[in-house]
Image (tube, rainbow, N blue to C red; front, side, top):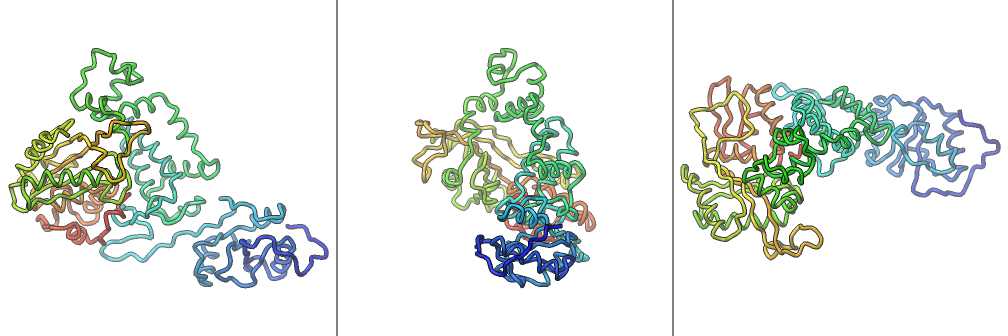
Length: 486
């Protein structure tokens, strides 16, 4: 209960022009609301008598979120999403300090997400458990949580614990899709894919501003060593673990150990480590697109070249640049990659090449087991990119005066009738594709991969020439590439 102040004047000087309060009478009562209004005005606050678009802070003693937010939405001020809806504790703190105190998580009354009516074809809630039924926003409003989840997921991945790893990645994917920041656990009650462990981490972050479990992982010698080793091109978690168990802790240890025989990919990874681990910019990706496009069209002018991966999803930076290349004439795609490689060699810009011939066989489809990599012809390249080829210059370390950098480029060449499936799969994101395949399997009894879409009920392959065809077959609304950053 706030102390009663004698002789509260009716008019006082306004001290806080940018803060406009509205006190909710529900639960508070008319006489108490009148007293608190006079008290706030005596301290220089503006208190509105009606809930209007001018209000910045709504204060309520009714902390029951669902009923309060239902009432607020019925009042429907246009800017409700920009209003702080606060518990009386914020008002009490502000009166004690004589100024508007900073809004903290404990002050907020967050809305609970209502459930939508489920349709008969594709049942969804306000936030679906499937990334293929969610659109990611341009801004991650919950980065403080998703960054923590990524560390935990990576730690479980290093320990080959797939279940918890996927759980944290699914939770991060859900939070990335939210157009608002989570400020209390109450706001997550209707969100899917958030288990006890994820919520415990979130609660700790909300209360302390950090996760002590994550901090412990980040300081763990094994985690730090495996993360360092796997940052090398050609080194996976199993190789990194093997080196760690041998007592190796640094690149110097690895390169000095004569019993370790690095393959060509790993040798190249160490040789160009600084360049390869530095992010590739969108301008650099555009320049590489021009290089690949020119190399492909020198072979066949009618070729199809598509930028995929993170850059197709609108990312400003990426760790490599992915392209799909094919021809309109079925079968002629077989000559593309070898000829492209030869062309890049002649230009003197090919620093590394790992070519994998096609093992694609339609007779072996559908595949009932998940495979991390498709069977199309592909090559993993490292190219020399000149500064003169990039608008605005290279994304390089300060003081680097070479005038060029090494960049990873991946090429895949599917037959043209598999193009739509390959484009969808190589566009990503990884979590989006994982959930798309899961949705197809669980909800539609279909098998989807980079090669095809198979209907197990009809026992037939479904044709597609565009990504939109695939979404339509699955009964899903089409989601643009830049909304798939799950």
